[in-house]
Image 1 (tube, rainbow, N blue to C red):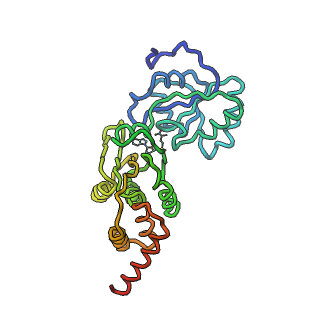
Image 2 (cartoon, rainbow, N blue to C red; image 1 turned 30 degrees about the vertical axis):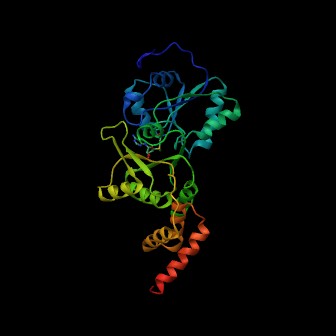
Image 3 (cartoon, rainbow, N blue to C red; image 1 turned 60 degrees about the vertical axis):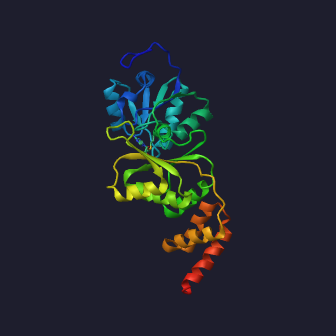
Length: 292
Ligand code: SAM
């Protein structure tokens, strides 16, 4: 095995190396990542200042080029043509695995279209690091990444995920955590969930509970700082609900929500047809308005 600090004798084929870098703790850099970044002709990175610090730490002197969604259309053809003429190019992101809620997808698909070899150099990713400490099922998992920030798009996204029988993984930032948890709880129901914050860093914190527990605890706490992942367990088996239970859930939801949102929430929780729940919500609302 080649320790970081020395160059291996392993000959690298030309092509694109998709190289994972640490998500906090520099000790998570792999020996192979150091070797590949050292031997590469060029490193495509999101931010040359961020990657520059990492390269300095490991004594890597390979030139860098900024590669992101803005300059991608201009830079990509050049990178692909360089690799076709025998160059070794590595792509890294600011932290973790490129392409996972980070740039790189179009470069990899461009390489595939042009017959350029793509080689993975696996390592850290907040996705897997958070999943494995979540204590939630890992046999069937859907990576969602960042939720849309616009209200309607967020609602549509969560409604489309509500019936999926899998653990769901969401990326989020500290300041947006409370709002994200409230939306998850509203559209997915009260499932077991975990918030994994600042993984591999000094203030690493893993908080487990149900979505409603987490809403309450993060509403009260000072806004958490830093980066975090929310992992939500699959929908639990439903006990059959009586029409009285459904009415109670609807009346509770109608206290704080519009008829449409209350019906959507209860339909998600009960997994009953939205149309019939909406009709019942309208009836209950009318009864409430008539003062009954
Ligand atoms: N490509 C990266 C990866 O493989 O994890 C993710 C990049 S994405 C732009 C950044 C998001 O990843 C953050 O908002 C957060 O959700 C998550 N993240 C990154 N580092 C993290 C850490 N140390 N602890 C928890 N979440 C982290």
